Length: 83
Image (cartoon, rainbow, N blue to C red):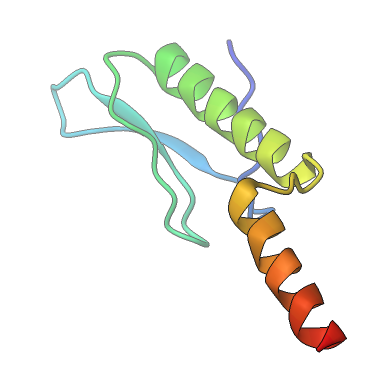
């Protein structure tokens, strides 16, 4: 059984089935309201949730990359401070 990782807000999410008799599962964080897509079984729902959390952590941990627009803004600011 796949282990469910905590939400990016730090709370423990819940993996729950949908309507009685249906085969649809999703993961939900009751603290912040984050929710996964719906899947036909628990394992797929948990694996999808865990991948989303891992991807979000990579984005947060990635160092800031200066883009072209950021460079242009910095150049304009530098020109204004010299004048």
